[in-house]
Amino acid sequence: MRHTLLASVILTCLCLSAADAGWPGRRRSCPGSSLLVAPDVSPEDAVRRVLSDQVAAWNKGDLQGFMAGYWISPDLSFFSGKERTRGWQATLERYVKKYRSEGKEMGKLTFSELTVDVHSPEAALVRGRWELEMSKDKPGGLFTLIFKRFPDGWRIVHDHTSG
Image 1 (cartoon, rainbow, N blue to C red):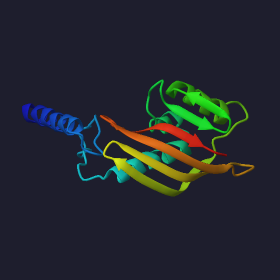
Image 2: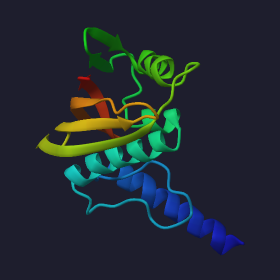
Image 3: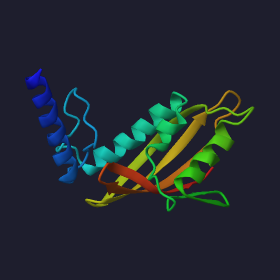
Image 4: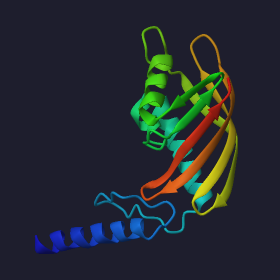
């Protein structure tokens, strides 16, 4: 029992130390499984992982999981068409209204033609194409994302999406 507790405490300390050390790809929480801290993950791979996780969450109908890729801040900006949305909560509400309200569907999301330009250890620009396969049509367009690295990982701080 003591050894299990000690091992758990050591693992937690290693995870927190890695997160505080600024390693790309690190995570604040380290459940007692494999080490989730990956010091060898490049910023580009970490950003691509966020996008991959977003697609997986969307395609499971998990809008909260999809939104985990965004910076939880009132300063998050989302531009689409002629509309500007400010803040994480307002962006979530926009997605709910557009894809979860009565008669709406989320469809199957894909990203393609991704280009990740890492501008510094703390910032990246992503360009790509999105497409939703819906029951009756396939809307799509282009997007430009600005990512910033925070203590808990890379997050989208600005999303400009065209339809």
